[in-house]
Image (tube, one colour):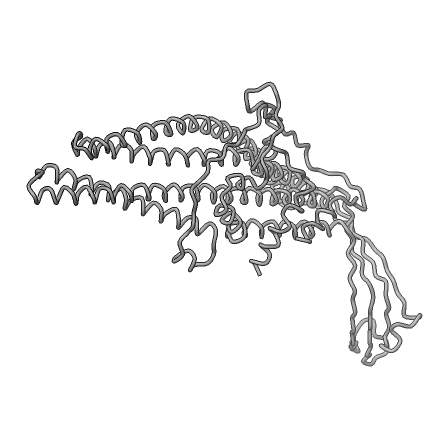
Amino acid sequence: MNKIISISIITSLGLLISACSLSPNLNIPEANYTLADSKQENNNGIDQRWWEEFQDEHLNKLVDLSLRNNSDLKIAYIHLKQASAQLGIDFSNLLPKFDASANALRSKTSINAPTNKSGQFNYGNDFKMGLNLSYEIDLWGKYRDSYRASKASFEASKYDYEAARLSIISNTVQTYFNLVNAYENENALKQAYEAAQEIYRINNEKFSAGTTGEYELSQAKANLESISLQYNQAQLNKENYLKALKILTSNDLNNILYQNQDYQTFNLKEFDIPTGITSEILLQRPDISSSLEKLMQKNYLIGVARSAFLPSLSLTGLLGFESNDLDTLVKNGSKTWNIGGSFLMPIFHWGEINENVNLAKLNKDEAFINYENTLKTAFGEIRYALVSRKNIRLQYDNALSSEQAYKRIYEIAKERYDVGEMSLQDYLEARKNWLNSQINFNNTKYSYANSIVDVIKAFGGGFDRQDENSWENAQKEEFQNLENSLK
């Protein structure tokens, strides 16, 4: 991570030699809309660790585990480090290169060599040691545009990491909610199954005593089998979500295979969505920022491709010592230097350069279309997330009222059944309706919780614009954990 931070600092340094740029001007259309119907702006935001607002310690631990152990996030981090390394490489191309060299040569000159006038074999030594300079003057901005393209790629990798991080956190939170939902449905069906077993046992005893008929006994058995089927399906659903959650949060196979997952009853947390949100919030979405940086990268690479049409000028130099005797190599009389330049002008490359420029332009056009599609997708996701949250909230209120009403109906039915004023069929129907309303309420409650997560995810993890200068500081501990896990 220190390398990433150092590269970010280097980018602020001025370049030694100014150069023009052959990359085209990039005109990016602005999207200026209001995403919420309100005339008054509200600056309330959501904390970066927004999942902690649900006040569930198990959830907090699971998210921390996913940030530490998830393989997809590790891959995104490796891509970030790769982009950082490439940025350092391209920055080095802007500067002169110095190399230390040492050569030792012993030669034998033939008698028939044109330069040999002695008529005898000549033997000679040549020892060299010094510093070599090589530098290509960036006349047309080739290396500067390459550096700028790598910087844009590095920034895109940062945003890709943020997108992967947000996706993993959201998936962990929603999978946990689905797991808790499955647990609660399983518990509700377990209670219903135990009650159905008791009703069947009572009816079986009455049937044996001749006080009830086969119809009532068969009805109780059918009810028992129906609830048993639902109960078994709820157990299977729970295991499915448990498996998904363990894969998200752990690379320990024993943990995935054998250990159970703790949970607690979810406390619904209401998030206030700020009003008067403008389209500038889209700049906070990492996928949009990433696609924009990739577009800028492709635009700079057009300038790199165009520079191949023009001549290049390189400088070379040597400062050191040369002698025919190793003992006198570092003496004053052995000092030597040279400086020179080379000029290279492309003449005919069979269309290679032109096609490279065309390819770079096509890559830029593709990146522009991807950027536009990302914007459209973002607007669609935000709109759907807001509408979905609003509608599911209404469903939640309705489901809560329905569950309370069916619960009261069941309580009255039980009182009447216990005193013999209601038939078994009516009593079972009342209990079944209450059971269904419980499950429907649980499903709606967690659908509403998931819709809240979808809204936060659609807005890029919050509603406040992040401080760009605090990006590295906010990720230091997380990056250190990933570094340790990769070792």
